[in-house]
Image (cartoon, rainbow, N blue to C red):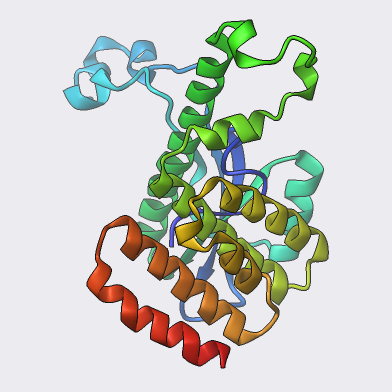
Length: 258
């Protein structure tokens, strides 16, 4: 499933997030952990005695100064409801991320927390890197002379740096977020998500039918969910030049729209 942002912006992660995952056997059971990406890269081995540092694999030492996410606690734990976690994220201004479903097995919950923390850290690293690149551009080339710096749309600039595949991946995440908002009848989240999908759709070539994806994703009907999935599938087939698969998808779209 990957990370779905229920609160926050995947294009500009804060560096601290509450992760939630549901039990596969009982959807009412919610597991959670807190992911933290230190603002200053550090090497744990630097602070260990030589005897202990020698036990750390060399590949970990080589990448020790890279940005990494740390789940705290290191395993998804049961104990708080979704409503409590949503309120907590709001009060603390944390990102809130749905990372899918898991079992009651401790090893799986630990692995899931670790993997998703690294995925979140990569999103954060991408954001920081892109923001630094934008800030290094000559002022006269980056902004019009009459435009104050605080009026710049940083998110728009970041989105323009993404490849078509990355843009489609973000659209897919936002479609999932829109369906989540519809199911929870969260109007504010739905409006914000629709705005972000529309912004991304405008940056995609017309052949991907971005406006149709937006319309389907925000439709309250089950048919809307299926259409959004089909439109996304069609977009990826176009991107990967798998043209033989497209007629079947087009037929399925027509049947749903009849």
